[in-house]
Image (cartoon, rainbow, N blue to C red; front, side, top):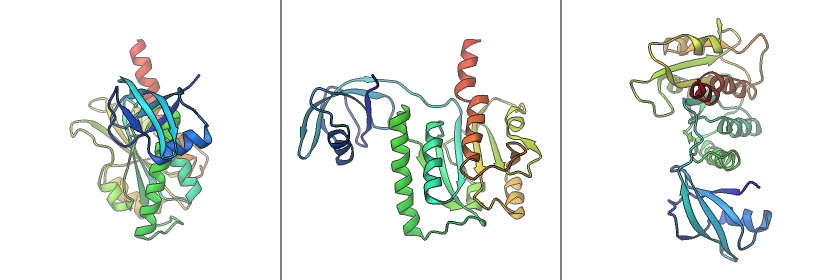
Length: 262
């Protein structure tokens, strides 16, 4: 039986007692209806996970006993940054959730010219906090013990000029923009042999209205390869999931497993 996993933002320590925060406490007590003696898995985003047991369900929260720490990591072997142009709320939530499940190290919301969503600074800050909660929930579900870094929204130009995931300056880093006008496939861009094996990939995905020609030219001038996923035009929420699956199959989860087996 799979144990309930809960994220706790405070640093955890084995063999100690803890009152869980309001959110996890409410979910455990009122939704799952767990009681004293039930086993949990807790993680704090700093690496690994802890065995835990519910001691009591009280009015002010759920008290747990922390046990052994297990240095288990389920991160991808390649640092993938998703630079996603902001789209409508529920679709953006879906992208954040699935990108987290697919192992991205960082998510950067990007404001682009043809995006249909226009939010002021305060609204974007609230949306970012919501996306952070979505990513945490996805980590609890999929078994990741580290939360992907969710950056503040930035302009298209800043997204192209900067990075996302923290990457060693000596690492081989592929930067790709997905667009139906691309001259080659994403797989070809990732399989082109660099001077050293790729350890970081940034994937830039457009909004519902796509990129305009000036944006594509700007990205190309800043080191992005313009690629496509196939002959069909994908929805804005479909493209990132398909692209991340390709990246992980060629460079990440499955590639690491296959290399270990050979």
